[in-house]
Image (cartoon, rainbow, N blue to C red):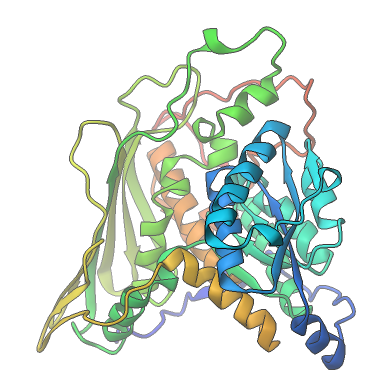
Length: 437
């Protein structure tokens, strides 16, 4: 079997196997061609949902992607975060010449747990979803149901029910002809596109194995409980330190190393792994957070192909973010440097270099203008599920099949949130004791 062809378990099979779509969703009314074209010719009003560093960056990139884009609304759980983001955008806008396109009035700054819905309902055309990943499925569903084009940061969910929701929203977005662009930025990197194109064309023969690294320093360390004020509820404490809680971030493997997971999936033409085993744990103090700081996951694909992914986020350690592809006729390496292939012919990328974060938005807005919306939904959900599969294997210490992962019923994200709610912190997983749900 040629491993450069999709295995029988592809993205489409993923949707079928997970038993998540079932019958076709009722398709809402689609804008007529004339109305759609007229909309695309005018000003596109952007709403930002999640006003942290990534959200601020995404808004800046939207301005640079299209000269007829205005920022019309902003939302975040915390009012001060909105003001901090707005100030940063105004400062950069004054330097870069887009300050006059920041149209966010005080009435269009929405704070609170329902801020996302208020932004969506404020009359915007495009929403940027950059809140913590645990909220992504709910925010995406609300956006596409309201007929908004979407930039959706990675990962797309922190549990399998969330991924299933994302796939449903993907189908609705297609029916409504809405653009849905994923924050898996490497797929929008020009050198990496050329590299994987050549890999898929057989530059190193059939892929035998892939070794990916995501070795980095600590991210958002958890503060000691003594810093928590007496009047701060459980939910606010966890939201302000969201990276350290599995229901919000998905763990470092899912939230950060998901880029490397996505590149393994890309190399395999998004064929689904058969199963995975993993090791992992926590070596550094985390106070009352509940995520690991290292994992090593082994994915098994058809024909005994293996994908190995090492993730560590510990300070003062060796750092690397690379992908090593071993094939029957050669090898390929892709990292922060220009990708290289050594096979029957040696190749190194020497072409155009662009900002992949900017390209995401350039292509998003261009697709809206053309009336040919991009929809990354299936593969972005597939890569997210691969990340969750690796986490499940590490947390339980068990071999996890693709079907196990896709059909998991473990729901980490509470259905209803309230500032005064009692929200106990789940204990950290213990391999051999923690069970797959």
